[in-house]
Image (cartoon, rainbow, N blue to C red; front, top):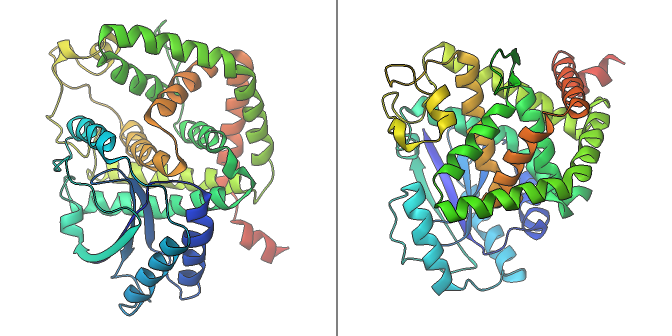
Length: 376
């Protein structure tokens, strides 16, 4: 299983890249019946895009390699990005390397506005996973999300990526089958609870002074944007009510992705800790009280979760990987984690979320848009 990767060192993440390079490339490849490729946004050794092409896919042609690199070079010559402030970037890169255990040399930054391609294989790409099957699942989900991301950047919504990310995360949470809670601390067991969990895990790791400052910021941010979030929720519901709307198509992709991930869990190919080993568990006294209560059993071992949790967590982490492509910073991601959990605690928004879930599931049960057009 061979793959071509194209690294484009580019300091900016904006509509220019998508409209002037990625979208035309997508059209060019589609005309050649090739669809199995992904885009990621990375920070290792400098800000960059990483495009991965499945060289084992039908219709892939090795002669394209030179043409794709030339397309990248032409784009970089015509639309170079701003210089990287290397001194400050090395400090940031060292911090990210420590947080993510990337194992890179934080002093190395590749030359900005350059591109290079190289061949690799699934075994190398799966090095951080428990199996090649797990990595292939992530690749397939990234393929699924590529077109909606590109459609966003090349459409009218490109100026407000937070709006798009809000809708993406609302719909993601809605794929999780809700279950009633008898715990007074939890309104309902649903996908929004994972946002709360992610926020608390991150918040708990901060120094006490930072915790206070972040709490103040997210509470103030949520209060300031409450009306905006309510309007976005209304917009999303209206969009989902239109068959064939891009939001409806994205919602259907998320439902399909969730079901596929649950099938992996059912077959034992992923579990609640994947891609980490099942016995890799943080010390109980080192995590938040929320995680101590819900993620550890009385013996201090990891709580056993059902396949819907395993599948949802797998898809959630893939969507989190997509947020940098949308220009969503780690702080904005945590703001959304916090606010989306707060939104679902209010009756009006909870009712809207239930309607959105129903619209998504109803759309997923329908023939696709093209089939409906043919039938008509």
